[in-house]
Image (cartoon, rainbow, N blue to C red; front, side, top):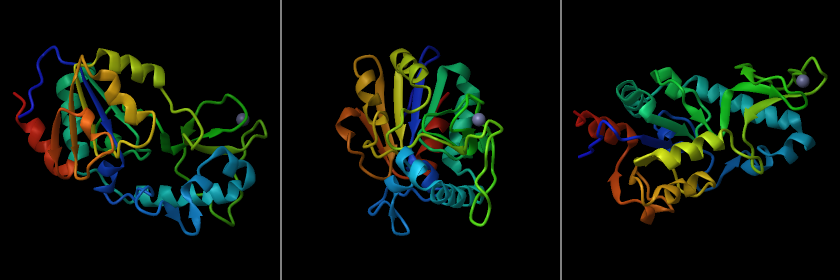
Length: 235
Ligand SMILES: [Zn+2]
């Protein structure tokens, strides 16, 4: 049974497992391949410099796949929890889709960026909403400054977004929950280590994460089945 007191501050980290339950491919499974490419070869600053068309082809495909996906009961349970807890819930996701927003969550921290946003690779123009597909023969999108428009995604070798806010929330939280995340990708994999000593640590997911030993409580199963049950018990 999950107990959340009126003074608890809850940090929830979600990973690819939650989106996978809505049918979004993870690419980090056994082979980590897209066609003949390793994912690192289409999702890195080096790939962007070498072949931006290929990068946009990859992200256009991901936009198409994510457009067809709908929130599952895990996303809905998290949105409901947010309504109950208000700013005592800090929802941080490694996922780049907008399924949490579709389910009704506000203020979701997308530490790895957002699939339906783009930004200029040259000037300081802020990221903007963009759901277009840039697949050949479409031309590559350009900014007014002449720079190239790139996906608003944290690529391999880049620093995740909002780390200051994230580490502030980790310091403050009294309950830390990781859901459907492999515990492999840094820095997210180390978040749980930051809260040991001042927060309860709970893992929810179908697969054993690499950092399992850092969690004092584990709930095995699909997030879409476990979360609604866990949160339904809250009074
Ligand atoms: Zn620009």
